[in-house]
Each structure stands twice: as C-alpha cells, then as structure tokens.
Image (tube, rainbow, N blue to C red; front, side, top):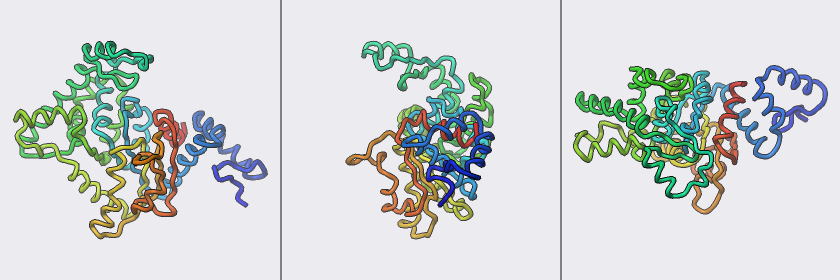
Length: 348
C-alpha cells in the first residue's frame, strides 16, 4: 500500500508522515494553508490539479494556459505574470478582451471604479455609469477615455504604420510591438511586474487570440475598415491564421515535450486551441501527441448543449485527450481558484 493517499497526503504514520512535516516546513504560507486544509471535494480537486500541473512540468512537459471571462480585469496578472517569468507557462490562448484589458489596467488603474453593490444597481444607475464613460464588468468599471481610447491611439499608429509598409501582424503582436517600444510602461499606473502580457512579451511566449473581432479594439479596427481608414482588412491577421500558427507551434513543441492544457473558464479561449490536436490528426492526417494534462476551472454545469460544462472524459471521444491523460475539473469561481493554484505552484 502506498504511504500517500490519492489526494497526495501522507498516511499519518512512520517515515511518510515525518517527510510530510519536513515538506510542510519548506512551503510558503499560502501553499502550506492549501496543502493542510484542502483535503476534500472541490478543495481537494484544486490540490490534485496543482500537484498534477507540477508533475507535468517536472517530467519535462510544457503547459498551455487559456483565459476566458474577464480574468485580466480580475487582475490575474498578480499571479500569472510570475508563473510566466518562472517558466511554468509556455503558450497562451485568450479572448481579445483579456488581451487588451491587462493593458487597460496597466495604464488606467487609478481611474477604475469598484462597485461592491453592483447587484443592486437600477437601470437608471447603469445609464449614469455609461454617461460617465464607465463600462462595468461585474463590480469593476473600466474608464473609456483613460483606458480604451488611450490604447486605441497607440494601436492606430501601429495599424496604419503596418499597412503603409505592407506588413501584417496578429493582434498580440501589435501589443508586443507597443510594449517593446515601452509605450505603455511609460504611463503605467501599476507595478509593471503585475502585467501578465508584459511578462509574456519579455519571454516571447506565443499567444493565440481567437475571435479577436468581438473585443473593443476589434470593434475599433472594424470601424476603420468600414470607413476606409484601413484599406486592407488583413493588416490584422485572422483566426484561421492563428489556428495555422498554433498547429505549427504544437507540432514543433510536442516533438520533444508533452503539452498540458490548463483552461480557465469556458468559451472560445479554450474551445479553439484544444481542437488543434484532432485537426492535425484527423484533417491533416499526421500523427501527433494528444494533450498530456488537462484541467478546467469552471462553474458551468454539464447540461444539454453546454460544451463549457462538458466533463474531461467527453474529450476522449473527440481525440483531444487520451484514456490515461491526467484530467481534473475544479467546479468553482476562477477568480478565487486560479490564483490559489498559481500560488501553490509558486510556493507562496
């Protein structure tokens, strides 16, 4: 019989327990709290998933992280940026909103407004926020003038310069250009080490942004195409091209390492990249490794038509995960759970 239970906790006897006590003494306070208290149900699932993530890295694997929802406005960069710096994230898929909102927070943090009683707002109060140029995301209002329009002016310069030179870039590459020119850092209102996008830029991590068109900047760019300000719609590269790039990256990276999939939320940020494996296998007819680890943090329930609530085993039938792929699902609020998983992995 193993000296450790299936959650990774020692049986309270002999050498195993002594090793456990010694291990606990090396942990940071948050990791120690998680390790000691999170023993059952969703709490244990969190520990299992974090430990599985670490085992995957320790075995030489890479990790691909997906960001849905409003995780940038939730300031996930406070922990995700350090995960990137420490080499625990190797590729990212995110919505256009998460891509831009990390920088909105960087340049306009002092102008954000938090509304703890957002559930009690009347329609008239919501209209008053609009009149003040405040766009609400749950309890947090993003200031349009100080955040969105400031970023738009930088992107406008880069889009028009690229078109003039006959060049084309992906949405995240325009952000990387601006960051490398320090156009956002110069006006930063937060400690720039808390920007996950800057950390990704510094590591030159590949980012894939499916459905960028539905973001604020995607809408702005569309207006430029409609009015003729941008003559070539392809100055910003598209989703099909992102899938092509992802396939090339996955094939090259998986030659030497198993790639894990850590999904925060549901939707296109996760649905888009996980399909690259069956696409390579079934449509290209080329053998490729399946994803070597899978975890999803989600509060979406399994129901008719709810792909985001599908349990991991369903992905076996689609050729995305193997029968023996380590699979985890943490049914909880990602704004609470993801920072805890990252804190565990960072030994905070």
